[in-house]
Length: 274
Image 1 (tube, rainbow, N blue to C red):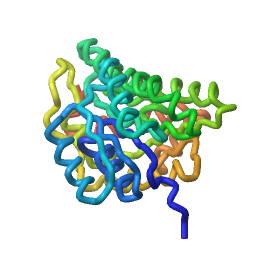
Image 2: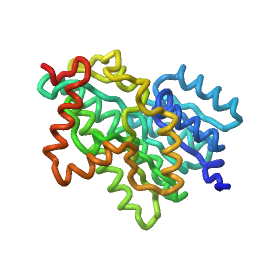
Image 3: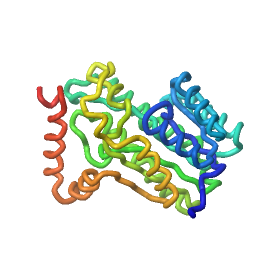
């Protein structure tokens, strides 16, 4: 029988009101962790808090906009105030986009960087001393877009590339402290991220251009996040397409470019069809 290394561990999950974040918070709760929920929706956090409490796990809900540094500082302070320390940080909060760079308002790219990249930086900065002292784990929930640029997703890809560089550097700087840092890249996952993706003018897309039911489940990704932490994984690309991307971009990058162009062009109402 495997030892439960997550029991009583203090875990912060950003973007925990839906999708991968929500599933991950529930998975840690099932393993007996003390879970801290962070997202912008107070109503959704309250519902999830009740669900986790009913499971018998300890939980703290903290309304947080990760693009705001003060919110991230407050998140860490409230966590330490209640639980005394932090063992694991799951940087999951993020938004996407769908527009050609030629058409997009630059404020959209700034918003992507503020939430996806700076949200990761802020939360990591304030949680890091506690996680290092516990020889804990920092996880960045990424995407294949962080390994190879995706057309129509300039801001999304840029933010994920930035997260990779940031977290890899944090890992190296803390080698002696034995800090575990993992970057996990799921495939397309059933969630609301495409519904809320920003289009060229900064408004939300409002629907998903893909068949959500055929994607991997958020619960499957959550189980892999815990498995990756348990095994001290460095990088985990969860799809064969993603693994081939990471490999082939070093051998035949032009072929990967063309393959992603065709893939994104096939989406309904793709901006590449203009």
